[in-house]
Length: 393
Image (cartoon, rainbow, N blue to C red; front, side):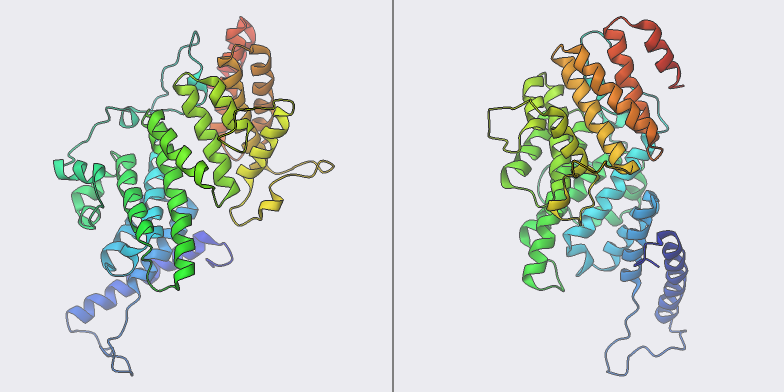
């Protein structure tokens, strides 16, 4: 079921399997098991608990059950100190679960305040709570726990501790940062076990690329655009494996430059492939946005040659419309920062249309409405702004 994409059914069976495996392990430890302790080869009989926890965590991630994904993967790491806990991708998955928990929490907290006059950054910055501010609460974090976040690799003990597991719900981004640091540490060592060297190196490079992009996202959520730019420039300067992640890095870089008050450089992040280039051709800016949206929509396994839609065939699909809405929201904020309110309104209208045509992500529709509302208010079109803003509630 997992192989054919039926993640919910697969997760159901993995849950049943885990209950049986845990019962078998307990019986073996209590010496009450009727099954032989050793296999016919003379080796100890293997109970695949770690593997089942790992696969259940992947299915839970795909299904959007991020708390369960975190619990399953943390138990996988705890039960396999010499195998899974040494794989960078496992630490990446547990960090993704933490980020997922954070994104779900944002839907249940109040929206951040924003100002219409002189501040356009709110269009691109998502809803926030106290935990993602630069002075987020640590809620019981020990001094050694915070020190591990700032310096050196993180020991597995921080993951299996019950108090730390409970703290994830309070500060998921803090835990995600720790796990991403461990992912990068293992990827640099290239010590993924059970694989040949070339495959291990490719997987580690892919994990490191994803981890750095995730760290850039966390930095933006924590209102630290300078730190986000460090990760983004590090990624783009070395050349990225995935065109999709490269496009997302461009969007993050655009947002970070907009936050620090440099809209010209932010616009350049969207418009050029070579980050070192200083010449910007804006003759086909809409085409550039379409290309970035197509790359964001593109599945990671797709070939790079498929990253551009053909000119004679209209692009369809809710994922592409969502991506096109995202890049036009970004472009609208940039144009508003540059003082070109007419172009800002046009990009906001494009985003609003594409977001309404898609039903996959309500948060994108909300962001598109807010972007268009902002343009109307800046142009003193209060009646149109009131009509749009009333639809948010």
